[in-house]
Each structure stands twice: as C-alpha cells, then as structure tokens.
Image (cartoon, rainbow, N blue to C red; front, side, top):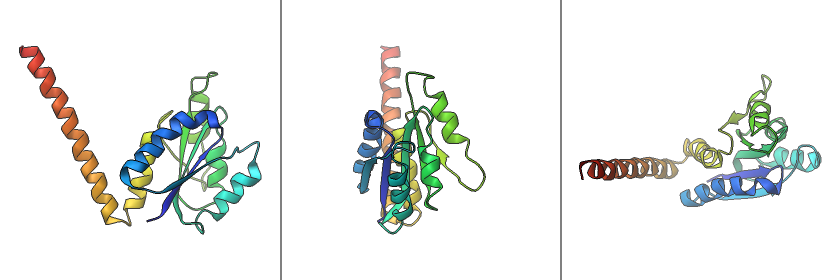
Length: 164
C-alpha cells in the first residue's frame, strides 16, 4: 500500500495533525510527517513534493494556518493528490487559511477539508488509496458501519431517557 505524506507548516499545527495520524493508524496506513514551511523552507518543501511519488507516497496532506500557501506549494511540485487542511490561527479564526487553501488556480488542484479537519483529511486520503486497495476499502466500509452503530446507540439512549 502507498503511504501518506503529512506536511505541516509549523509544529504548532501538531494537535490537528495528530487527529490525522491517529485516523491513519486506526486504518493501518503508513505515513511520514514533516515540518516544512512554504515560506521559510521552500526548497525542502519542494524537494519532498517532487520526490514523493518515487518515495512511495500515494497522497499528500498539507496543514497550514494564516496565509496557508503550503498545500498549493506542495501541489505545484507533484501530480499526486494533495489535501489541504486550513488550520485555525488567532488572527482570523482560520478563515484566512481556508480561503488561501481553497482558492487554487486551474491546473493545480488541492482538495480542501474543513478548518482543523485533520480526521477528515486522513479519511479522504484513505478513500483515495482505497481505489486501488480492496482491503482498505473494506476497512472504510466497516468504519462507516461502526460510526452509524454508535449514532444509533446514542439515539436509543436518548429515547430511553425521554421515555424514562
């Protein structure tokens, strides 16, 4: 199975990145995580992106706040799918990062998830990888069923409380 590359613009994004790593761990998907900045370490970010396919990656996830140019910089240097995760900052509550991530020019697509959406980014990466991996697809089906079961259990508990 291909692995997932995780790139964060700053280690301050690590709490959000951990949600993605935990999800990937739960699905048995290998990953590497790095801190590369689109502005402070552009050469390293570009080198990682350019060599990602040759290094066994199937999807890249880029986490960044504020100007959030990391996902676009990564996507400009690879044809692998890139998922951008805009991270909330103290300045504009993450809206700046969201708009920077989602407003990519034609020819350089970046899939974008919600602000601080590390878990969904990992699930989207898994779904992309599952197009060529039936075992992973089955894990995703099982996860969806388990998630649905948990919601129905909560509904049953609510109904019991309301009748109680």
